[in-house]
Amino acid sequence: MLAFAGLWEIWSGGGQVAPVVTCTILTTAAGPDVQGLHDRMPVILSPEDWGLWLSGAASKTQLQSLMQPLPAGRLQLQKVSTVVNRPAVDSPACLEPLSD
Image (cartoon, rainbow, N blue to C red; front, side, top):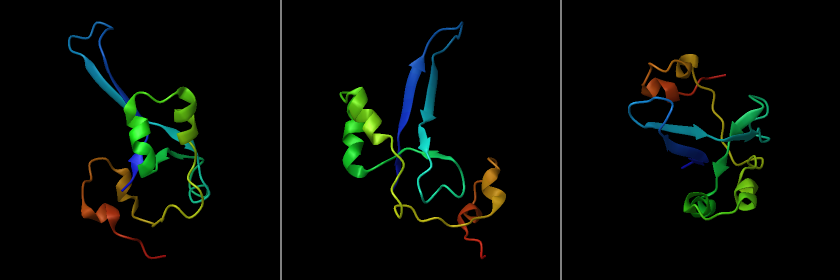
């Protein structure tokens, strides 16, 4: 299981009739496993850090220490079809491995 570091808030203002729920996934520099694909990657939290991230009591320094790229060997990468690039596609085919 992966847990991405994210932020959310409910925003009221700007003439909106109803509050707007917003969210984002935080990114960091690409770790060694991802560098060949992209220069950024989501901040992936270790299970032992989930509580700190969600507590609301962590200091800025503590939170920043969690926003590091994963070390080499922590991710398994698998080529899949470019069908995953189409938001309208919700199919197990998105997960099917491509042969090299």
